Image (cartoon, rainbow, N blue to C red; front, side):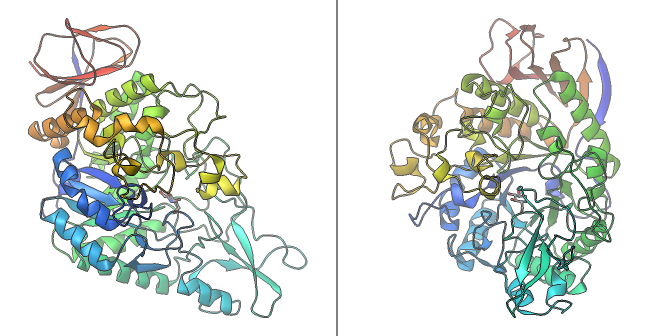
Length: 560
Ligand code: NOJ
């Protein structure tokens, strides 16, 4: 076998000061409503997170990304914020947030907060003021209000569609009772888009950043970071039916990836730089290629961007090799680390997605009638193998709560339990994202598997999850939880996050093989067993014997 190209990972430290922890960190996504419920109302909360912080420390993570916990009517599970500087009572209080920061920091765990700057809730005081004010007023100028087309303004200002289905415009009733202007909402009608060309909006978000930075957050995951600036004149655009639901069309899209958006992050970069402790910005930007996404992490912009190209890559050795190589070229080329992610609260969990036999309906979800239903045993096996690859890659990796338990997507949620606006806006045509958001199991024998002391759970948990509960996995060396703990410990011990990837050739087309420092990673993505070199085994995603690597299995070996 031969060594082929060498790819730097976390990118050599550049002029940015401090420890730059985010270059190599393993960041654990907490979706607060589904993590741990201390109050017993069936919805997770911040005291619940704090109560489980030792479990996260035992897992070996470096940081937490906390999905929205700010005040919100919860029309889109918190991605519709009505007060950016308060905690929603559903999740607790600002004092609970301070307690969580303190509990995390005292254990060496950082916290990045979700920030939703593209749109607010329609219950935000600004939007309420805009509705009460006249067309052309400063109050309307904080959002994107336009007159409609047609004789009486009865047609929307352009043809844009909401990401969640249906039109991206809603007509308002003016204070005098007449049908009036339209406002833009790229997502639900309860999520009006801000007008980011307005300096008042820009200044308000500087204030919001400082509010949370002053409270000690280590950074922000920035929602829809590719969407804040819209093309002048708001020209018509018909999306590619094969494009990703959150963006990612190959064509120029007048609401995604506009040049002006970079000025906002250059500005925010300066705000974060006023603070000590290496605060970081991570872009949630669904863009068509890694080269385009890398523009969000140029040295004076954000620090990380989610690698959705990696997440969307099927279980295929050639395609994985390509996306890994491209990522380790494109991000370090601008001085940033690559990130890696397989699951989050918007996509089908990878323990199911990797066994789908139909096209991956990313963002649209799967349900009982979806084609290509995943086979659970195969899905979990591939998920373990895929995570064992991901956590060996140089850069920073994101884990979504529950993937360390091997949780699959919940496919058979009853229609009346579903809550994703996508489900409602498409009248059930798209199942949406509830299947990856089901509250996670902690204790097999406890009510709601330990999620909530009363046994309540805002989405029903499947009966099979008893065997996946954390307490069932803790002492079992073959469990997925034990695998993740070992992977995180060995990743740290071998410095893989800061390493360099060298591809190894000679194992066959269906095999992914690379070296990162003193660790050799071999992943058999095909069906034919592969002969392993003689070397010490560090970790394996499935049992390996007689030097043979079975299908859908990844090993880390000590390099010789
Ligand atoms: C991306 C978030 O991850 C998703 O959950 C949300 O619905 C949209 N942005 C709108 O905020």
